[in-house]
Every structure is written in C-alpha cells, then in structure tokens.
Amino acid sequence: MIVDGIKASYGKDLIVDDISFEINKKEFTALLGLNGAGKTTLLKVICGLLKPISGQCLIDDININALKDKERARYISFMPQRNSIVYGSRVIDVVLMGATPYLGPFDTPSKEHRQMAYNILEKIEMESFADENFLYLSEGQKQLIIIARNLMQNSKVMLFDEPDSALDFNNSHMVLSKIREVVKKENKAGLITLHDPNMALNYCDRIIILKDKKMFADFNTHDIRDHFLKDIFEEIYGDIDIIEHKGKHMIIKNAI
Amino acid sequence: MDRSKINTKKYNRKNHLHLLVALVFLVLLSMISIGVGKYPIPVEDIIRISLGKEVDATVKMVFFGLRLPRTIMAIIAGIGLSMAGSVYQTIFKNPLATPDIIGVSSGANLGAAFAIVFLPGGTNTVAISAFIGGIIAVFTALGLTGLSREKGVSTFVLSGIVIGSITQGLIMMMKFFADPERQLAAMEFWAMGSFAGITENKLIAIIPYFFLGSIILLLLRWQINILSLNDDEGKSLGINVDLMRFVVILAATLVVASIVSVTGLISFIGLIGPHIARMISKRNDFYTTVFSGIIGGILLIIADSLARSISSSEIPISILTTFIGAPFLAYLMTRLK
Image (cartoon, rainbow over all chains, first blue to last red; front, top):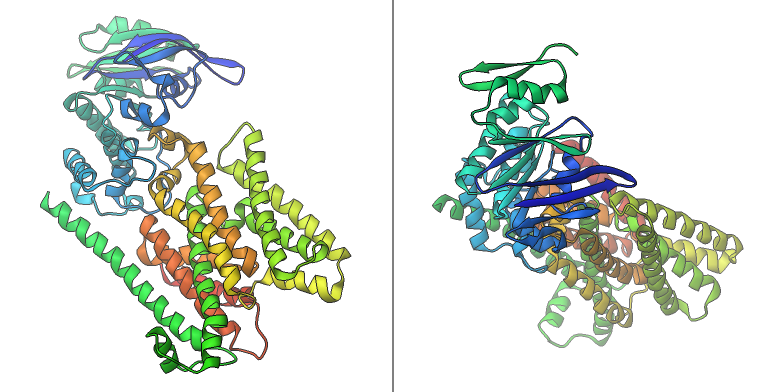
C-alpha cells in the first residue's frame, strides 16, 4: 500500500499535512503520536471515511479514495476503537458482517460465507463462541471477534485504530499479539495506531511517528540502538530513558 | 467443522419454530376474531365458508363485507407497524424508537385533520389526505436532515422532533377552529384509531403500497442489519450508509402511512411487537423482525376483537393497544433479564 502526500482537515484546520509512506505485505506498522497529532485522521483518510484535500492512497496501483464504499471495503478493513454493536447478535453473525462488501443489496450471506466465518473463528481460536451472544463476551473477546469480522472482508490492508484502548493489561497484550499473528499468517499489510510506544516496540515491525501534523520519524524496530530510540522518543515524550530487557526495548518516563 | 453445521441447523430450527408457533396462533385467533362482534358468526359457519360451502346469505354478507376485510386489515396493520418499529429501532440504534420518530404518524394526523376540516368527501378523502400528509412530513424531515452538515442518526431524530412539533401546532390550530360537534370529534376519534371503517375498497387501495414497502424492507434485511452499527463502521464494511438509510426510511414510511391512513393512529404496537419478539428470540436480526411482525398481528387481532365485543359501541383501538401493551411490557421488563 502506498500513501502518497495526504493532506486532510476537519473543517478549516489542517490536521494531516503531506504524509507519504509505503507499507508491505506481512509488515505490521505502528502509527504513534500524541493526542491531536493526526493519527486517527490519517487512518480515516486511508480507509476512505474522510476525503483528503490532496494526495491519494494506492493499493496495487488502484486509488482507494476514488472507489465506492463497497469496492473499497474489499481492499481495506478498519477496526474502530470500540465496536458499536448494541443489539444482541450471535458471534458468527457479527463475523458474517464482514462478508457485506461481497453481497448485493438484496443478498444475505450464503452457507459458504457461514463456513468461511467459522473457519476464521477457528483460526483465532474462538470457534467455541460461535453461537454465543456477542454482548455477553468480555471486551478482549469482542475485539477478537471484530478482528475475525475484518478478516472476513478478505482485504489486503488491515487498519486498526487503538484496538487496545478499552482493554486491561492482559487483554491488550492478547489482542495485539493476535493482530500480529493475523498480519503475519494471512499475508496482510497491517497499520495500527497506538498510544503506548512500548506496545508498538513490542509487537510492530516498524514505527511511524506523527508530530505537529507531519511525519516525524519512520524506522524499523528490529536491530535498533538505544540512543537512536532515545533521541527520537525524547522529542515526543520528553524526559525518558530506554532500557533493554530480554532483547526488547522499553521506554520509561522519568518526570512529567 | 461438522459442529458448525449442527449448530447452524439447530439455530435455524429454533427460529423457524418461533415463527411457526406464532403463525399458527395468528391464524387461529383470526378465525375466532372473524366470528366475534354484534352479529356473531358460529365457528361451523366460518369453517363452511373457508371450505367453499354455502351458508346463510346474511352470514355471508357479514363475513365477506365486514369481518374479512377488517380482520385482514388488523393483521396487516399489526405486521406492518411492528416490522417498521423493529426496523426503526435497528437503524436509529434506539430500542425506544417508534414509527413516528421521523414524523410519519404526526404528518398523517395533520393530513387527516386537514381533510376533516377543509375537504368534502368523507372517509376516503381523509384516508388519501392522511397518506399524503405522512409522506410529506417524512420528506420534509429528510430534507431538513439533508440541509444540515451532520447527517447522522441524531440529526434525523431532531428533524423528526421539529416536524412533529410543527404538525402538532397546526393540528391544535385546526382543532381550535373546528366545529366541536362534528369535526373536533372526528379528529379526536381518528387520532385514537379504529378498524370499524375498514371496507374492501380501502383495503385493496392500500395493499399495493403496503406490499411495496414491506418487500423492500425484507429484501434489504442484511443492509438494515449493518445500519445498526455506527456510520464509520457501516461505511468501512462497504455500505453507502446515507443512501441506504434514506431508502429504508422511505420503505418503512410507505408501510406505516398506508396503514394509518385508513385506521387512524394505533399506539404502542410498533414498540411492543419488536420488544416481545426480541425478548423471546433474544436477538435482533431478520427473523426477529419478521417474528415481531407476526406478534404485532396477534396483538392487533386480539385488540380489535375486544374493541367490537366489550361494549355495545366500538372502542377506539389505541385505548386497547395501550392497555394490553403497556402492562405486558412492564411484566416482561420485571420478569426477564
């Protein structure tokens, strides 16, 4: 996927200014930045929820922003911070919602879709919940089901908007490791916004940092040196230290 | 993998069982209902007519001229109002939404009041005017939503409130100037709903609109399901949310307007039918929408039978639907989790 010179705004204020990058198959990339840095806006432009002022987003040389909702949904899936399912539905029916981009307006999912949805639930080890009421699941389990729904869309690119923001410590790690697994095993290009830089260092292959509406840094998380990380993250998060534990980098905040 | 097939079968069988039991109930109650009224028709005569055998001429006249259209209308009204209620509750993400949320019944009420005061021609004119009033109200509400920058659910609800208030104001004005003996009474009775004035002609006149709206809703069942999500989620799943919501609202409006134009306002069915259906099926999907329609039909058949048998004069239908509906909802709320 190529993101090419995207500028976007809400109303009059420019929120995202001239951002370009490229992400590849099996690559899991984090988008970091403080509140208001434009992470979510950029994500919404990429997945077509917001029209950019200029720039475009290409997947296999196809301009995603010019596609209809239905066509675009076959190339790109989006996981919101929180799902908005309010009425009781079975888990399998929630996963089946992901088949929508492949249905005509008068169609409902077929038996084959149902089997596909079940196979996807097996992949993420949630098949035993297929007949449960979605609303009775834990928050972490709900996020897994939404991941399954997005897998059902069968898109090359998967976007995730802070999927851990409502989760406890364990569930955050569980969901993120599952997302990483899915991106690797299913050959997806994954782009995720996160608040916690440690989560990004832990699970992502690459980190892109936004600052003041612009792209501030873009680096690989494998084989990096402590002082390189410290220099970059100090610009964003202030007084920090980088420590290494079992080969992983961690950021410690010293003073507010 | 085998397990998924077994589960799916069990799931569908349970759905079908709910629908089947409710349908059998509806048919039985309709048979009983046809016999009830000022001129009771004995059960053996109903069976004889159903089998195509000869019966007494008066009985035949009452059966085909009065009871059959009326019973069919009660079933249609129950199904239509309940299904529309269920659809509105889904797309507005609000379990308390009713078909009036976007102004259709208040518009119909205004249309009826206008015809009663200003137009000659009796009940047929009132029906046509009510139908047009309902449609105009919804279009105005949709236009208002189209003019505002934010086209989300809350804007629709606000537009509905604006249109509802304006129509209420106009109705009050007409009531104030109306002749209290005839016109005011007619307006009040219209707003309480009744199946007493249903004729074969009226039934035939509204059936095309009712079916057109219902069929569109049934065909769009999966899209309606996705519209229960918020707009961003719906769009990222590949739905043109604004267009689809517009079409669904128009189809539901067609259903509700066609019904209330000939029956007058019928309260509570659009709320209580879907709630009972959801409490029994514990879900909110296509089956539940159809199921809620059949429940609505059952409720209105019971209400209408009572309306013409409790006292010597006909009781307006909304009095009964309120007294049946509200306590039942209260019971379900306290009994079930």
